[in-house]
Image (tube, rainbow, N blue to C red):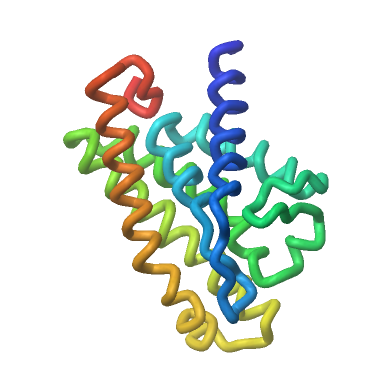
Length: 180
């Protein structure tokens, strides 16, 4: 139990630390940040349940006003802005990424890449695009077009998440909780 709580807190902190990398602001009002890499890693390394809980902890801290998002942003107001769908989708994305790694018994790197893509891109966009459409007064296709600048970076982050997960599996197999 104590070990689980430690991992959950450490990975919530990892997402916050990735927020220190400067964001790139886009016209949509949703910035490109490194924090989605942290969301992917929560799932691929910790697994579905712990990854979900780590991201929920992070999102609750952001909602409480801690400036943990890239650019020092935090507060409940973010949940009614263009990033709202992404924020709400963060925990689900981590859960799906972890679920794929836990259940798909292929090489860890392959499962982690699939999990990062399905959770960290497909699921996150499934929440983020409707959120942008709603808050910006756009149609779903218009919001999807606004999300296209994120895609290349998100694919790179998914590959990085898979490489990090694979490296952990090789160096310390017991530390990869998604396969434990």
